[in-house]
Image (cartoon, rainbow, N blue to C red; front, side, top):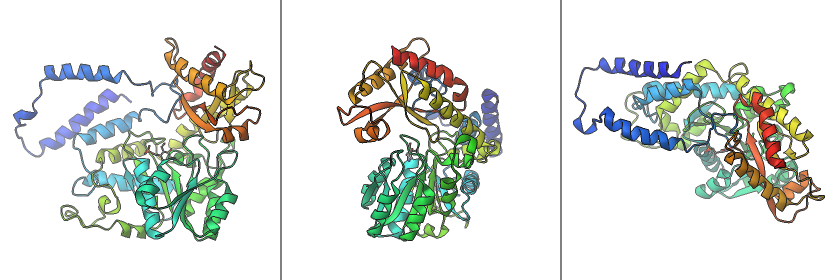
Length: 456
Ligand SMILES: Cc1ncc(COP(=O)(O)O)c(C=O)c1O
C-alpha cells in the first residue's frame, strides 16, 4: 500500500467529518507557519537518524520493528481526533473497536468467555493480572519462573505480594518438580507461566503447569506478552511448535499478549484477558466525571489505567481487518520468523566459529563466538568476544549488523555446554529476535557476516 496516499486520505476523511460541525477560527496562539515548522522539523528528522535500523533485517537485536503501514495510517488518522478509550464518552468509536479487537484476541486463545482490554504495555497488562491474583487470594503469594520477565518480581513488590522464583530446567522452562513442591506448601495463590521468555524465547509447559496448579487449587496466569501470537502456529510440526502449551491457555485464568510486539502495532498496545468476566468486580470505582453517555460497559470500568490512546485500538482494529489473528492471517508473518530461526540454528550448528547456545523454541536465536584457539574455552573469553562482536557489527561502515546480548549465569551455561570453563559467574552471549518475516531471506547473509566478525 502507498502510505503517503492513505495518510493523506486519513487527513481528508477527518477534515470532511470536522466540516460537518460548522466553521470556527483556530486560536492565534496555536498558529505555526510552514517556515517555522520547516526549521523545527528538519532538526527533528535529523535527530531521528540516531536510531538503529529496526526496519531492516540487518537489525537482528531486540524485539523491535516498525508497525504495519496500515496500523500507522489507522493510528495517525485516529490521532487527528485523539479519542480517549477510558470511556465511551471520550472515544465511542475506538472503544467499540477495542472491544472487537480484544474479542478476536480471546478467540485466538480459544477462551470460552472473557473480560479484557488493551493496556499501554505488557508491564501494565501483567500488573493487572497480578492485581486480580492478589484480590482473589489475599495473603497468598505469586510464583513465576526464574526466567520470567523481571516485571513479575517487581510488580509483586509494588502490590505487596510475596513473589517466588521457581528454578528452571536445562532449556530454561519452569521446573515442574520444584513447582509441585512449592505449591504443596500452600502459600502460593497464583502461578505465572511464561509462553515465550524474553531472553531465550522458551515456552513453559503451560499444560503441565496448569495440571499441577489445579491439583493444589492454585490459579494460572500466562505471560504471553512476547510469545502469544505463536499460538497461531500451535501444532505446526513442520515448525516444531508443540500444540499443548498453547491449547492449555484456554483453561487458564488470565493471559497477557502484546500486540506491540508480534501484532505489528506501534508502542502503546498490550492486552490482558481474564477467563472469568466476574473479576470485573475488583475494578469497581466511582468516577463522577465519566461514564455518562451510555449504559454499555466503559473500558475504564475494567481497567487500572484511566486515559488511554483510542488510536492504539484504531490501529489494531484496522490491522485485524487485513491480517486477522488467524493462522492464515498474522500466522503467516510469524511462521516466516520461525523458519528464519530454524534455518539459522542449522547454520550455527554447522559453524566452526559460532556456536548455538540452545535450540530456539520460537524466533529468538541465542549463540556465542566459539573460540577454536582455546582448547578449553572460558566464560571470560566468550563474554569478551560477544561484546566485541556486538560493537564491531554496528561499527562496520559496510554491511553493519545489529545484535543484542544476553547475560547468562555460569550454571545455566554449564548445563548446555559443560566443556566451557567457568572462570567467572556468567557471560554475555549474543541474542537475535528474528521477528521480521524478511529475516527469512536474509539469514544466510546475516550468518556469513557474523562468521566474518567472529573470525576477525
Ligand atoms: C514475557 C514478557 N513479559 C512482559 C514484558 C514487558 O512488556 P512491555 O515491554 O510491553 O512493558 C516483556 C517485554 O519484552 C516480555 O517479553
